[in-house]
Image 1 (cartoon, rainbow, N blue to C red):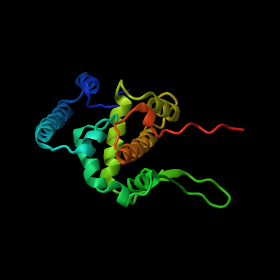
Image 2: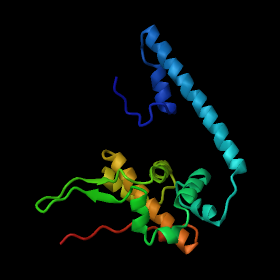
Image 3: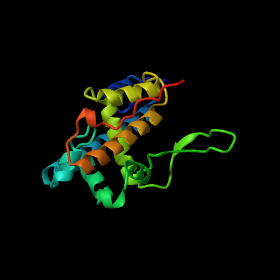
Length: 200
């Protein structure tokens, strides 16, 4: 049976699953898997609560937490994986490339190929930025420029959602570079989202 839930195991999706008319064995299997998910969610919540209480913040993690979509845990992940920002990454482009978020193209002399992101990268950083993008595009307080970027690439949320989240993740990665390097908290005016080029 088809459905329109983006998260089948979220609140709405779970309610939908309870309405399905399933054979007894299938219902028992589904309920068992849902119970496993609930148990994992509880365990993850306990770990997150411990981290919230015990992780020590420094000036960098406090700055990163001001960026939309980046909370305490993601701030620590990014802080640990990047290390010494300016010594390792001369520019925003270097950081986005290292994070696997810089677009590549399969171009040749006579054609423009499909654009994609690199497989060789720091996968932990890429996960962190895509997770942050996922959080921010769902948030009611998503900055207008990031919301515009996401809506433009998805045609109003109708298509290409994964590609659009990668694009938002790339902008968040660049934001991290700018804010970390300047040592200033996030403001919407510091966003590196670039305006579209005019067509002539």
